Image 1 (tube, rainbow, N blue to C red):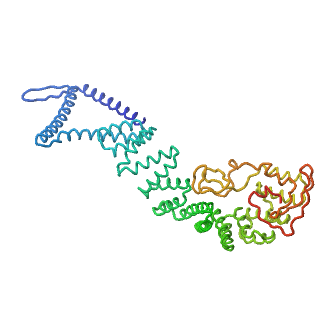
Image 2: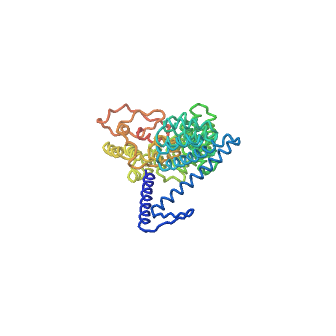
Image 3: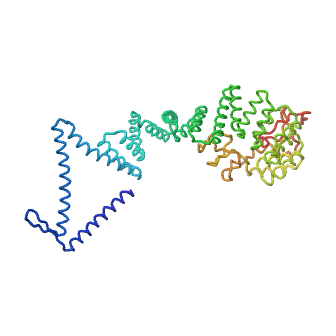
Length: 506
């Protein structure tokens, strides 16, 4: 639109300039005298201008006539294509002019004009490798999918335009949501040009979306070879894909392959929490408990996480509560004052019924950074120390509206996910989930009263793998008193997972 307006303005300015020039020449009063063969011709200013234009036209026609005469002469001398070449050159010039105008129109955003010029160029030139490409792109820009599809299919026959055709068809299938066909087209485009960066990214995304983790790792390796990725980024992302590959193998029940894949993923990125958890479990299955401990300690040093604590507890599932607390001291190490370390220690002390030590480990977290987890732990401690039920209820009321604390949050779209995934299901971002506390406006739903109710109710008789925290104060309004069941003399003390304390009081 802007280009058309510019051409109209220039045309009007040119007409105005010619009008001013003609007026100036007419007012000058000068005359042109020409002598030809003893005859004298006197021309006024305007007549001189008209004569000059007629002379230019005559010269141009003369040149064209001479060229045509030579073409006829060559034809009479046996060159049967001389006249056809003469007219073909004219058609070719007009065809290339139309092609050029179409490319300019396409770049200017005038898709309809570009499509019309492409059709004109196709009629004049007869070179589909040029005109069909312009037709396809112009039709695509104009929203004419049917014409674009036909044009791209026509380009598949030409080896020089095959890659462009496949890319065009790939874009159309992605727009239609046909990821199955798009994956096949992306693989074909990748085979034609393995070093093409955009094709690598599209193929990697489609392979990951289709859970083809092995193929995605091969594509990622190609990106490293072509210099599209720094080696540090490659190692991190390769670890993500290796981790998903390990999870798939684990789901299929192939324990040996699962262990090897999990350990490989952890070696590629030791700070990747899910990889460390799966690798630790794989090492425990092999009987290498020291190796599992070493893996989890290294990951905890990078970032403490509840899943790491749960995996660390699973290394020795039969140990007593006091033995577990002692063993966890080695896990906390230099990160003993980290919030996750303090919350985990408080859970362990509650499981061991040492509520004073649990309160000391919790410290002022419930006041400084009140989260559902820290407030639930505080409520459990208060109940264990015999606090009134009203006080426990008041703490849990605060927990209803409190933050859930750190979660798997996407750095790109800020969405919150329950479990870690290599690709964000909301924005399709690759390797964008990080363990952190999301902004307040995107916090997950607060805990419901049904989730926190176990801390208000009387405890059920402890099972063989549970630890009774404390006998709550009698309150008929809460629920009836169950039959007393003495706790085991030396109960097992599994660590409570991230939100388990919200579900358990003992």
